[in-house]
Image 1 (cartoon, rainbow, N blue to C red):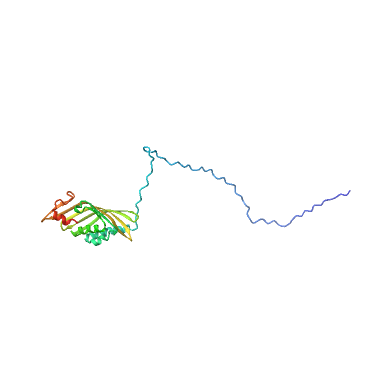
Image 2 (cartoon, rainbow, N blue to C red):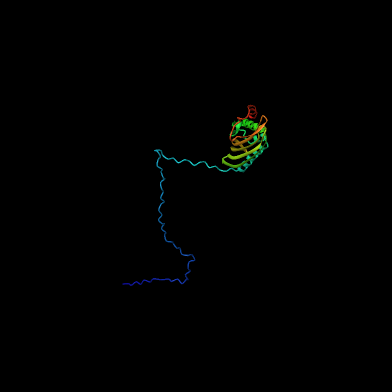
Length: 233
């Protein structure tokens, strides 16, 4: 019987071991998301019906804004009263819209109380007033304006003093509310309403001059018919 011997050859490397230049990869531990409860949505409050009818919320009122030409509007109002003080009717009519403006005089405005629709009627009103006026000065206070788009509602208190051909010295206090429209780069009047609070005059009639306090009388009843016709537009 032949015996077999098994030789295992082991080779040991003598080369130096060079460490790796790349850092080891570190895997972070998994982070569990925190427990977040969903938000609680409250149901809308339902108002109980009134007299068997459901309650409907009314829409908010429109917001009145400003206008880029707001300062120009103030200047236009001032220029209008400068034209009035100059008794320049053609210049005054340049401030009114050509598209059917409207004027209304109420309160202590005597024979001129009424409505004046249309450009020509407004022009005749001012021609009648200015034609019977020798001099007039006008100033206004308490100015305010609100805007909706290119339309402005202007209110102010107007005070005038002067002298008329038939009424002598006069003084007026008027509450004015006018509507202006911004057209082609300028403001024009489309609605002009004057409420005469006080109108005091001296009436020259049949050679007699005497004071008339219109806030007490408010009419032309003491005038004779001839003078009333002269002053009526």
